Length: 299
DNA sequence: GGTATTTGACCTAG
DNA sequence: CTAGGTCAAATACC
Image (cartoon, rainbow, N blue to C red; front, side):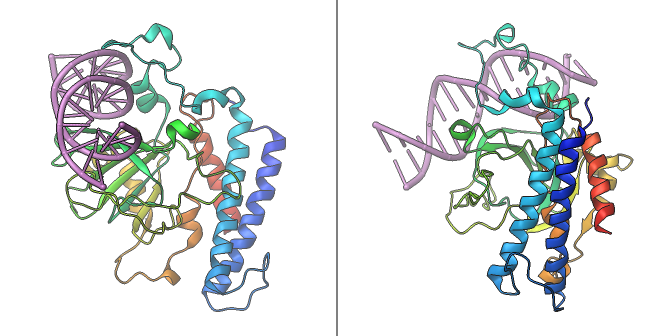
């Protein structure tokens, strides 16, 4: 566990400051106040989009800087190179560092956040790689990885599980970070796979994706510093931190009554956390520490 | 035929 | 031993 060194922290601070500036402008615009244009962005839809992009960009870069500072040896963790069994048999000896996928999930890699959505869409293209009946849960858990895992070595994954309490709501836990569409000015994926069907992954549909994590379908978003288990499990265990996180997270009382004016773009978008790979030395706990500082800055 | 999804098997932490 | 995460062969779809 290495704390961020001073240089990246400094860079991150600047980026966060810039992000905050953009957020302030955006807030002013959303509230109908006059605000100085930042980067030429105005109250037009394009301008608002530009501002949100700036905020996201700043946050992403800041977080990346913080992550990099503690995970220099983590560079090849996302190359997508897989060491796996050859024929119906794993070869753990050939991949000691990667041998424990489960360990990464349970003890190392942690969910970056949990979202409650009415659809499984989030603007990224996911490929389903597994489905599992979860003990004590009425609905199976679906496992997705980024479609660009092989192309770009994008290690982003997510788990989707229908909420028992609210079957129309999906609880989505994200792991890892999208590196596939983060290449600076490169826009996110241009298409969306619509998994909205009731039976697991349905037929894809194509459309214009919302900005990731700024989707109107997001009912709640929470950062999950200690999340290892499913959101459903965490929701059930009332004493657990995560359930508190969810309960106390950005709560949107009623989706239908929610207007964009009530939605703090920073709340939603800044939750698009870059998470260092689970094997990195940069724990999410520390990461959250930065997060709190960041939130302090915003207040 | 190529690609995505399904699903049973395999693996491992607890 | 159990439950959960992932893989990959089989299957479905376009």
